[in-house]
Image (cartoon, rainbow over all chains, first blue to last red; front, side, top):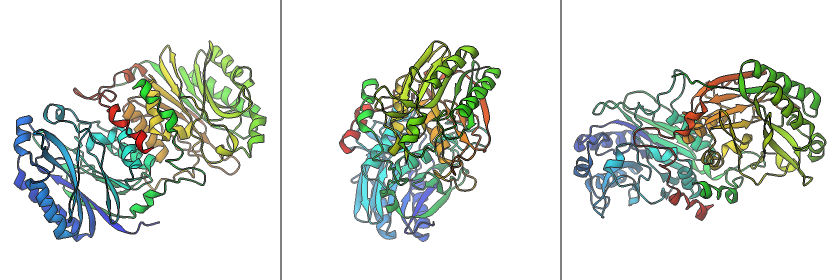
Length: 283
Length: 283
């Protein structure tokens, strides 16, 4: 049964750390391409303005901009208005508290709808960014409710569950999946993609992942951009190629509101939260 | 890097509902085959004594036996002693409370080490069995700590997390994966296997799944028996063939005690349980 409804896009980009103008140009081009394909939502990679392989906290700070007044989100608001779509992407945030965050935002023509700060930091990010303490946001849009988290966040099933229980129909996930992360044996799909598929399946949500490509300061990327249906199978991708691309899929996000997976089963009401409370005894 | 240490086996069996003698004979043969291959642990399918496609509660009751004194676990204790291995398998339990459970047990030469009752019931099981209210058990064995859950339980990331946090190095999962469950598109691996891979990866545990094959009262099975390494990639299987088989893999279960996945990352200490408590606000 083909989905009807909304075209969703994920933009796999080649970015260069510190090259903010060139990176923003890459975003502009990808958003225009997505819009031309009819997309109502376009997902950008993690840290799409600064690039990822930052040397240290000082370099990150030099690339960071405030959510409210900074150039990155101001440009996204302009792009969203011009193309009549919603952007969910990662950016390097200078917080009002003076701290630097690995953040993401959902922006539409009406303005910035949500800012999220990555709660689970990967590797050297721990030396560069302050972790976020707020749950993944969920924003109601005309075509469905969109949740937001960043890269390594997606590996924590509790976090995905939280976004799903808060009402996300689709979870947008800006990532920078390093190719060295968990190299797949021959013939096997990468574990990062597998984790995204399982997250979609166990929560009955769509998941849209925008990854990176090309080498940045010696780091190669998986290029695993993918749009996954609520049942856990891909609607577009996973690309797993080292090239820029805008992947699109036409999906009906409202399907994610029905958690039934059989006459007598429902992914949410079959949960046993009373028993899961024991997690707190061993955590 | 090849694993060293323990041979683990999963037995994919053809069973017939109500044919308890024939089903037990199938188990005896599979355990002997696993033992001949050097297995120290053999996992059997869900409801391996009764068969799965029970008509109603009365038929289930007629096939059920008590854990302490019943014929099924008595035979497993005898087999475990004779072959010097541990059996983790599903059986139809008549509880001391008179209720019938979809249960599983871990049995070794010293006796029954744990009995677990499926907490998340699938489809018509809800009309037949009483759900369990206890967490997945974890049993310390000479070669590692083995956790236990049953089929649909594995689709709930909270449940797998609980077993992992309680110290499971390997989670044994007796299943009856119906082929009609979530049919995979061409070229895609079945969602049930994907979920098991992601569960292994996100928790840094081994997972050993024993599935069914052949048709039972019109129901076909996935035949997806698989042994998954702690990184989430298969060590043996997934078979995904409609034939009986004993799959084995040699694994070092102690590897699961190191949850590090990089110089600065650890699957458990990177969790944010303080933030996950918000799950209780939306559950």
